[in-house]
Length: 469
Image (cartoon, rainbow, N blue to C red; front, side, top):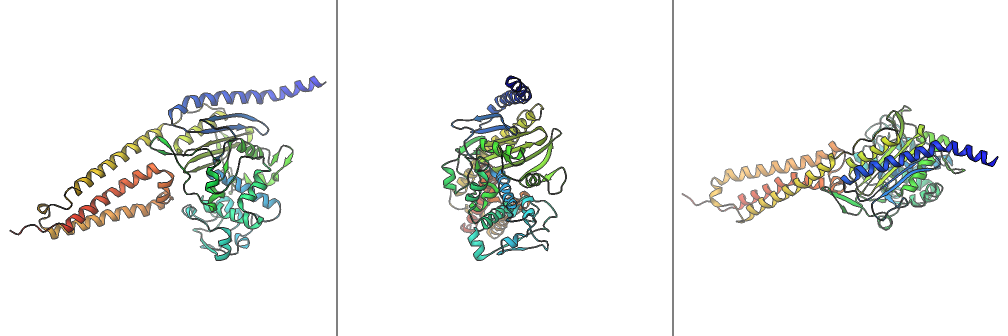
């Protein structure tokens, strides 16, 4: 009888085992084919079903599935899970106005109350650009208050903003009476079995996470995290490992259970996965719902100055996927993630795009050329210290033209810098921090004419008058 039941169990598990073996072989072959094209310092890949790990791979030296990485905006999904734990305990409701929980927060620009649900769904009316502004810590908020302007009525439209989840972090601290780090450790990470997941100060994180890199042209260079702020941790700076993210994906696949323990009510997990429009696509609570190769897909992507991450759930196929890297090469990383996703959904992976690889080389070459041109121009301008008298005949006219040229150069520079956040919805300074090579190229392209025109104008204005006659 025992042999009979064992045989039946093996037959039931055989399709899953074969599927897992097929995924392993195909993902390995895909990564072996495409990864050598790029300088990738480290990458972790994990594929899980609701009760087993189907595939894991550590790419690079001195890492394992337990190695922590910065998650970027994938942090939002974990923060949403933490908020829903408070909802389950009855300590807040999804439709509760935020200002009743944080009375010193003053919301302007709308007549509709801003609720917890609006923050979770990114339908608060807070702009993406505002998401790059820092929130005060809870104690300062309660002492001095904070004025928050919305650009539209809450609940009317979706606009992704880090500030939504930074506010949720403050709500967690206010309601739980603990720091965000303590609450998440006790109420989310520990119950989910996420032993290598944490949040702390930049110094604490640096001692634990994998070495980090930023691209300068096509070459990854060791770097430390940029734009880090404790108030932004709930939105983008939680650290975790591939193994831990596998546990988190399984808890989502099982509707909130870990082994035989229920960690979150299944109805709340379902709400977490439901788009704010109640349709088939759109942002839910720390998850985006859409489709891939005709299959329903829940996903969230994340990036920081030194990392890129992605998590996926295919509910109908009972599969979860996580990819973590310690460098931020958006085009390449997304291309590799798409290839892995194609494999787990039964399709052939497209070749990893090399567009960004050539683009990074182009950025490096252009930056060197622009820098060389600037040095050459400065050397010529400064060789004699000031403009030659013969070149300043009709000095009154030359002075006027020089000043106008300088005004135009400065105006163009300032105009583009101030327009950049409106067009890209990212402050120009953030571009310099997040993509330093592209930021440097942009700065050289915009700033070189200003520098050379400034020196030339100064030379014209200080040049001696030409001899009379």
